[in-house]
Length: 273
Image 1: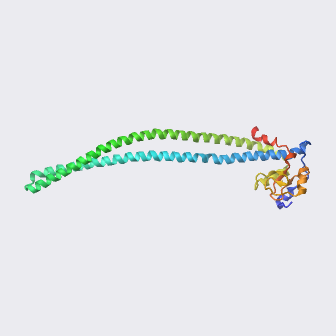
Image 2: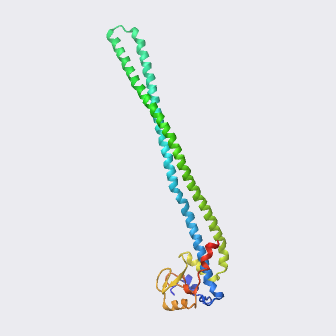
Image 3: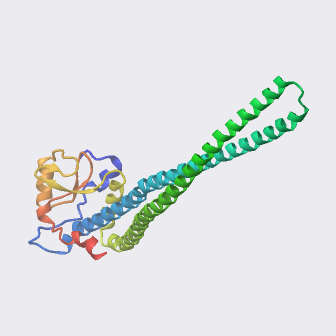
């Protein structure tokens, strides 16, 4: 059959036979039980894959929460900058007032008229700077008040959005916990199903599914349902005639003829879990 040496010994199981659905017997359970096990393994694998994917769904929510936190951080920084400029202006006013006091203290001691006028001029310039800074302080006070009001609005809005995101994450966590519980329930059924599969066939199945999934595939006309390569006519006849259990000579998957095996029993695994 062209099977690898490690699979060749079990490629044809002469002691195992299965019968057409209208010839029900003990041997008919051989592939049905194996298909049940494969369906269970498929469901378990699906659960494991979803367990990996579900937490990734929270990534977008984490990104949104970071964006919202950055938005609040920027608003708070804007408020701090306004306050810092206001304090700077107020400190500048105090310095200018000190200079004015200093100049005014020098006036009585000035004898020359030109020097007196120069000091008066300097005092006037300092007062103008104070006036400009006071106007700027008023503007900054209004701006700070508006920025604080906006910050509070932003915090309320952002908190609401974060609450919704947290609820979404909690829902994902709940789904994940339910999925894990479901997967464990399925895994608990596996030992029992393994006991129902002939040991030699089970060993072959386990080896195949390590490299190819699914390990058991239908014979579609004269082609393998796994790799879609053509199967030799003699092998096709033996599979269709329920004479032997065969594997594909190309991909080495176990083959079965759908009309010979009822899949209804194999399809109830997930529903009974």
